[in-house]
Length: 270
Ligand code: SF4
Image (tube, rainbow, N blue to C red):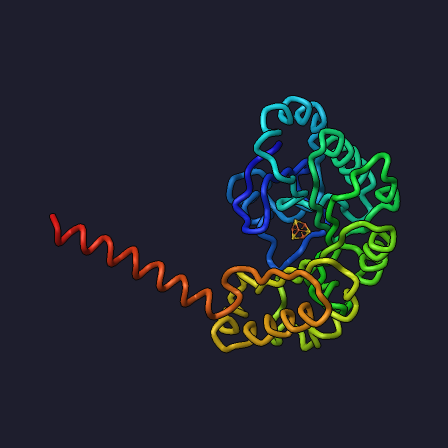
């Protein structure tokens, strides 16, 4: 259940559901991986989530093993912990957060669903968890096409605001941010809707051939700058995902060149 994540802003991670009813078509990395490794055969199978029924028992076994290494646990990268209209998933997630917090393990959570109000019960759940939503648009037509069965944007924001108003830390992942050929929209409008959060993560859309040239034409550079300025003006913490800004591409080339240079030197020495 618990594993060390390779994602740049995460530590340990946990996925207690196989599949995800939100059925995103950005495309969904988790679905592609599940298909590639033979866990599901089709989209229809993917959107019928299956709970890992013994998740809590597994956690009881694994927490003592990893406790000293864990800074925090992220839920989830390969499914959605507060899956919209799937109460059984949300109920299990609440039990998992409670279990981890009982051992003083902090959780970061990310959903395209609706947060339960019970999370404000500070006797049951730790007060230093961080609750995030993914929000890449405010347009319901876009949602219908790209994340058809996730929670409506407005409801997502309201539930997050409720947690914020009750003193909990909140964040938003604006990733994968769609390019203008998919939707013309004003990034500032989205940012203004979430100006109460503690942290914003921004990242480009990957794995979509229709949008690949936007990475080089400066579109994401401008978007990242808008996010950075917005956050700086309001004292909001931010993180721009690696590869979103051109400077990252330069860094990748420099790293590659350095590696190449080292290999050449070794060859010459031999
Ligand atoms: S919410 Fe996440 S895991 Fe679920 S379908 Fe969408 S992208 Fe995939």
